[in-house]
Image 1: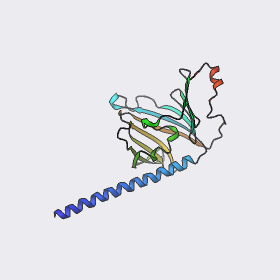
Image 2: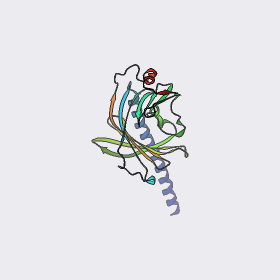
Image 3: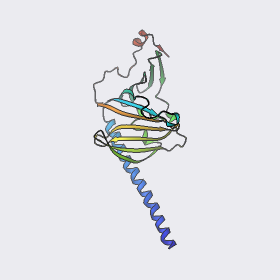
Image 4: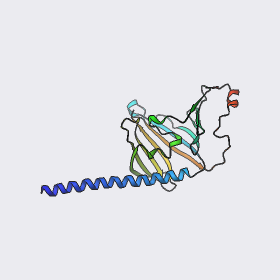
Length: 220
């Protein structure tokens, strides 16, 4: 009897491990498809909305209206407008334009990734290092078949507890990104409009210093 119980637990353990490995393989296959599809475009123009909840801090879903933003991505270059600030990365330098304060800061390199947060230039490749992942729920949202993938940072001290990517299965596009922070904050970013291979001006990712100096912006 004891031998049968031992065999049962051994079988159950290996079945569980095999199932987890299969889920990770399926999740990686889907993530790779999405990455391949979205990086195949010469550029992407995306409008999005974001919301923040933190029950511990008393910020509940629906307390505040979603915050809108937009971004143009071409390779590692991007032009992001969000919360009254423009972030312009030309592949070498990151320009942060604070329109409220009329201040411009020019920094060498992109955002510092040590805090674990996901930045625009890494949106389609961040999962390749530092995360484990598995298939999550499958839902139909606004007529789209959406597959969720749950990603967990390997670093136990990461500022991120979990990332959930919602994938539009038909288009192989990211529909939504949900980021759960160690401080109990939940940030949800939803893509509301998507265009690819748009005709961009050669100066799209270039800072026009003269234009901003005329408007009395300070440049550091």
